[in-house]
Amino acid sequence: MRRNIFLSTSLLAISTFSFNAQAALDNTLSVGYAQSSIKVSEDKFDNNPKGFNFKYNHEFDNDWGVIGSLTYTKLTYNYYSRWGKVGSTEIDYVSLTAGPSYRFNDYFSAYGLIGFGHVNQDDEYYYVNDEYSKTSMAYGLGLQINPIPNVAIDASYEYSKFDDAKFGTWVLGIGYRF
Image 1 (tube, rainbow, N blue to C red):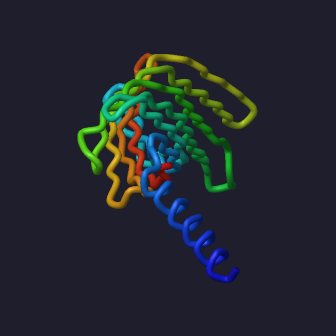
Image 2: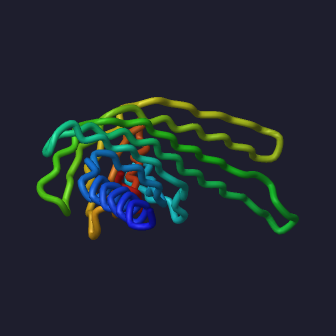
């Protein structure tokens, strides 16, 4: 009886581990740190908006897949006089992009992104409030590196232009491949 239980348990464990070893690994979910740089009419902001990024990559076969990305960055800048705070500017940037991904081998995957970026700027100076909001095209390129089968390191660059303002966003993240 003990031999049957041991044999059954051993077969179950071996089949479970062999299933995990043969898992498809065709999905990658990553989260990362995002930092934008802003140029307005060739003048660059001193401070950079910071935020986060989420990506989901699904590979249809051994080579091709599709990836989706959501990025959010924010910058708050306060204005002071010698009597204290007199105003502030708040800039929010959000992008939603998607595109094809291509796996070169077990370790490297590259992708391209295209979609929409949206910027919202709220200015408050003394008693005057002003708001600017615009949606434009966003596009980017990225690379996912898999140092071990279930871990992904993600790096990408995204670009958007709103009138005279140019947003360039770098993302560095880590993900889980399953």
